[in-house]
Structure formats: C-alpha cells, structure tokens
Image 1: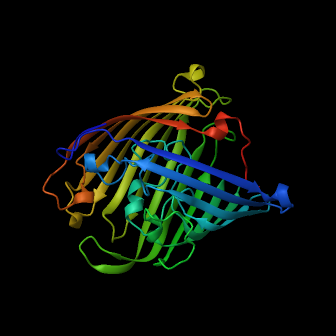
Image 2: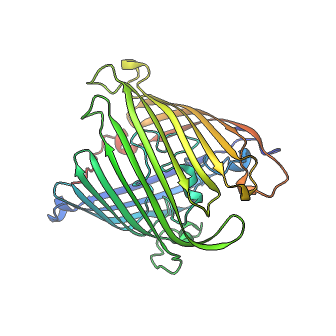
Image 3: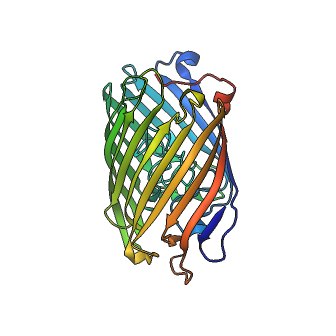
Length: 367
C-alpha cells in the first residue's frame, strides 16, 4: 500500500513470484567429476508500485520486474576443478547472482529492492538482462585463497529476451546487440570460519551494446565501477549466529545512464531477540540515487529508506513486514509528466516459502 508519490495514484499493489528448479549432479549420475546441470523456471505476476510512488528503482521485488511471464530462466552446465577452486558455468544464464551482490540476507531481502541483487540502478544502466530472463553466457570464478576470489564473465546483450512474449526458449542470437563483460575481486569470510565475518569487493563492467543517452545521442559502450563492504561488528557467542553487521557500498556510472551513482548503507541484525527468535532478522538501510540531470528528474537525488523484519514462522516459511519512505521520487518512468511526485510512504508485507527447506529436501553443494 502506497501513499504520497504520484498524485492520484495511491493504492495497493499485489505481486507474486513462483520459481522451481533442479540441479542434476552429474558426478553421481554419470561419474563426471565436478559436473552439474542447472535448470530453473520462474513465473511472475502482479503490479509494481513504481507508478504509484514515482520512483524508477526498487519496489519491484516479488513479482513484476523485469518480466511478467512464465519462462525458462536458467539452463547451464557447471564444472568445478581442483576441489572447486576453479568454477565455470556455461549456457543460458545471466550475471544477476554473481556480481555486486551481498553476502548478507539483504540481497533481495529488502522488499523495496534498492538492492536486489545488485544496486537497483544497475538494471537501468546497461543492456544486460537480469533474472528471470537469460541469454547465452559464461562465468568463471577462481578461488585464489580460501578467503579471496577473482571472478569474471561474458554475456550476450539481448534485451528482446525481456519481452513478455518470450518464454526463454528462443535460443538464437538475432536480438544480440553486443556483449556484457563484468569482473570482480573480493575477500570473504563467514559465520562458520570467523568470529566477525566480513566481505569486501570491488568490480566493474564494460557493456558493448548500442544505446541512446538520456539527451537523445546514440552511442556504443559504457562502463560502471563499484565497491562494497560488509562487516559483523557484534557477536556475543561465537557458536551462535546472533550478531549485528554494518554494510555500505556504491556504484558510479561513467555516462549514458539515467543515474550518475547509487550509494547504500545500513545495519543487518541477525537474531535480534536472541535464542527466542534465532532465525529472525531486521534490516535498516538507506540508499541515495544521484540522478542524471538531463533526465529531468524531480530533484538532483532520490533517497530511499527501508525498515523490514523477517519473521521465520517455521523453517522455510517467512513473513516480512516492511516500511519504505522515498524522498523526492525521481519519476524517471514518466519524466515529462507535469505531475511532480511527493514524498512517498509504502507499507506492506511479503510471504515467502522455500519448499526445499520447508520439506527438508537435500541441497546441492557445488564440488
């Protein structure tokens, strides 16, 4: 439910998402050491609140972005070498889960989606498709030490795969308009191997596709650079997950995008009520979107704030109430409208069921 935002467009926006997938362990099935085949289908329906609030990034989680359709979302082969120190994925895929993501539960846990899985401005600033759409691509991860890594990839730019009439089975490259090349280096520890785990990463991308700048100039090729940091700062018992982590990050675009940058910061509280609620979490975060002025935004910057509580009902079932407040919505989805959005308040909740966890099904772990 939204209030404020675009005049005359307050209201309720339901949305839904259903994903189903399987991993075929080819090491157990065929004796192919380190090999696996991944297949995922995804269906989305409902309505985004962006047209109500007047902001272009965020408020699409759980349903309508980037596609309102059922489709084949992933079909790729994965091969691990040297005890998973080198990992390769090739097939119908996308970079969504591999670059500029968070090691905390905030990646797509924030219902307003200023981070899902990348900073939300990422999806308006290049021609790479996001999950649940896919194109031909490949991913390489090299675990240089137990806690450091280098990763890169190459993905076909084919935004036609985002069209509602695409179900993910169009494997040709007629819509190809270039190549998307991301890279990242990072350091990462976890609750299982460090008292105060941390994750630090820096990266960027080159997008080779044609595009038109916000002021109407056709160009080819654009880049962006990012850095992120997460650090657990309080953990009273090293044998339990109860802890508080701080996170911050930013991405800067070099041109040809509706944003100059996006910066995020917040607090992630695991088990805020201790042993009474060991699987609950609270996230408090803010995000600043610096708008490109030639997009005629509502203001030079848009500020997005969220507080959410992830309530674990039973293993695999969570209910997540949230509050979002958006200051100076940029209205980039309707930039030439005479209706200037007001600050917007959004209240809602999300119900999520992880059937594999709910029914205790075995989880595949890459070799």
